[in-house]
Length: 167
Picture (cartoon, rainbow, N blue to C red):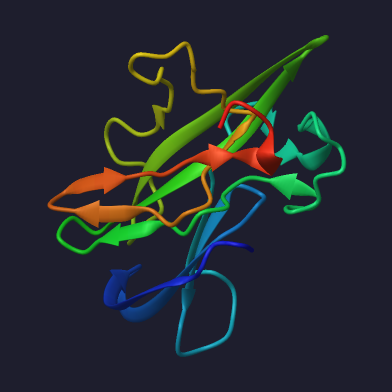
């Protein structure tokens, strides 16, 4: 776990009211735990698509990079929108098919009471920097800063993973 756990008080889950701690992992799984009593998760949700796995640090071209070991999944701290009871998280994953590997970064929106995806979730992250030839590379870009929610808009920041160009 690299992402900071999040807390939401008085959440209605499965017929009860709970103070909840949400934990996102490098295994691309989000968990909801009762903050006041130990035990099994209230719910858990894998953000891996069929056949996908979290990205191995050995996939990064600079194999001396050891900042996130051994896998890279949900690294940044998610954000909760209390107005809609939604937790947003960015998950990094890969799909290996024969000799081809495809990498993904996606923004997920989950209901904080059930862990189910909201309508329109996930959204695959892609793009090109205006005025440049720099295209977003889901393998090489790392979403380390926590997500921010401002006036109903989720902001996501990326940098280069392990100082591998492009930045």
